Image (cartoon, rainbow, N blue to C red; front, side):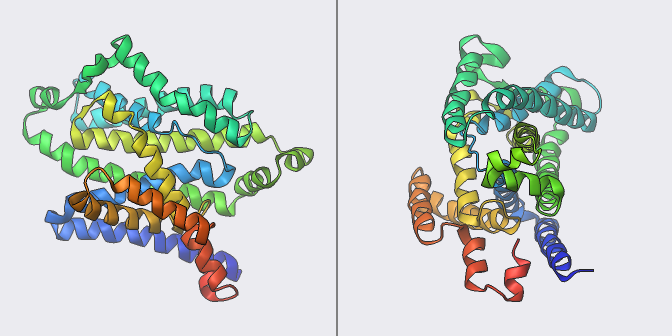
Length: 330
């Protein structure tokens, strides 16, 4: 086995081991379960967002829409379905996949024919457009949102309220983080990833070699959207309610962007490291400066872009170029 391949697999193993460590901590020390969920939530958010941004250089400012759709999809499952609660969760994930795929397909087929900056501009209005459609036409509960706690109690009993909010929500977040790691690793080592990198570097040259830019960009856009919807579904299980004002908050997109830029675009370990740092700092800053954490992180991002334009992983690779650490950081 070639050394480069072995090192990449070691990086994959280290990423999975990090998630496994959080699972073990949560299991052994249940009182830390909320903090563990908080950290893994941001790891999953950063990884899922970077699958699209990191391999295409396109920024989707409407990414929070997919989290919101995942939340609504899971809420619909508990509103509409009366069977086993585990099957309700499975149906919610299926609906999340359908909702996110439809919107991503429509937006992608139209927007991904544009260049990066124009795509970013085009998606700015996506969030507010869908939100105002839901509120204005009173779709899916309108501005009042959907609350499923009462449905869960009436259908399954009060014990399921806690079980779904704690165990199922956490498990889904762990699964989404692991799936995001697997997808990112695949893109790094596969021909699909190489095609995306060629498109990212020079789309016209890639097209001259027979690479279809729209097809590959649409593929990762839809995968990223579905994983984002799963994150939103896990949040619905945790909160057991979804409200438009919160579900479509631009803050989630900005947080994902911060994690990706600080960690390093298109890397496996970057969003994971930055996700842990962001969650820890946000947890701390929220207690001392509530509402100002994004402002603080905006300053951090500016500092990182100026001093470390390739993020933490990019800086470490450059600092230790030619060493084993350089090869392990992917």
